[in-house]
Image (tube, rainbow, N blue to C red; front, side):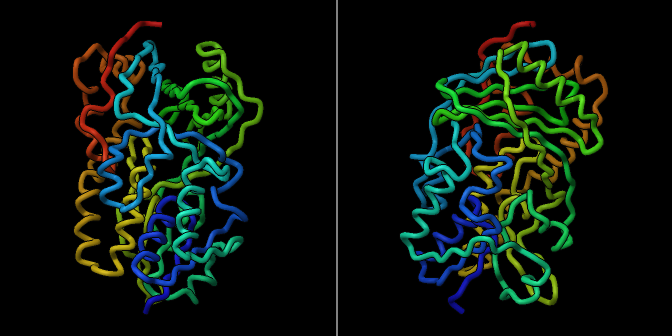
Amino acid sequence: MRDVSIYGAGLSGLTAAINLARQGYTVTVHEKEEQIGGSLHCQPSVHMTPIDLHKMHQYIGIDVEPCFTELEEFKGHIYSKIVTFNTKHLYVVERGSRSSSIENYLYRLAIEHGVIFKFSSPLTAESLDIMPENSIIATGGYSNAFTLLKLRHVAYKHYDAHQKTNGKQICLAFFDAYTKGYGYVSSKNNILSVQVGFTMDSSESNLEKFKNHLKKTENIEFNKWNKVIDNFARTTCLFTRLHKKTFILAGALSGFIDPIFGFGVNGAMVSGKIASKAFTSKKDAISDFKRFTHTLNKMYILDRFYYYLPFKKFIIPKIFEIYNTSLPVVGPNMKSIPGFVHDDCFQIIAVKKK
């Protein structure tokens, strides 16, 4: 059969669509929103990511370098310390519905290759009943697909905001007692965006603590914030069976995301390529999937360890000292990001106490 259905027009779905269309398949992409770029509640946004653009191009067959801009400044407010990182091999990329986003870049390429798009077409229980076997499901963490497909997952709450800026390409990270993991602010294409995550049962007062911290340390204020419920897979899975049919999972649904820091841009594109490979060689797709995700189960454990770690405000700052090499724990685990990154990312160049 040469017809392929893909649910989700995010990075993984678009990457899969482009690759399959190039191979002569008739590809139809279903997207629940009315436009490319995801929900307007959390877009536009700017994401910082480590990435090896040359290796990414070689693997996925798509040159995405025009979408990425080298980071000019990266600073972390980590409990009692301010840490400055080397920006080598770190980039910012715009997400969302604006024409300058990476989603629209891939969308335009998909249209050139004849991919058909159906907007306002969400994944539902009814569509699962009638959709063809081996359809690709890449609807992301914001959807209800985890529940529909009965996939193990954990939910968490984050707040997003964005505004116009005339600043340079920066990233600011915030690790403190009020966050689940961390909050970050990034800028590109005259957009400054922020995201900060909390556990589902954490107090709304934590958001106010973050706002105050942001205002006090960087003199940044956002006027409007949106609350978003996101989901993370607790296991990695390329295929799943439901209603006696096999479906191919891609992106966040497949667990193809770094569980510690949430780097997902790399994984989304690589995952889309792997999903497309499943149509030509399931053996190769499974082999690649295992190769890129083999460390993720360890990272899930490390994530839980960090969550329950006592005395974080004393222990975590101790890790951040002056090093000529990458940050301990983080640096050696860059390969756990299921994509292509350089080994020498996140080198610390300065540390000072607040």
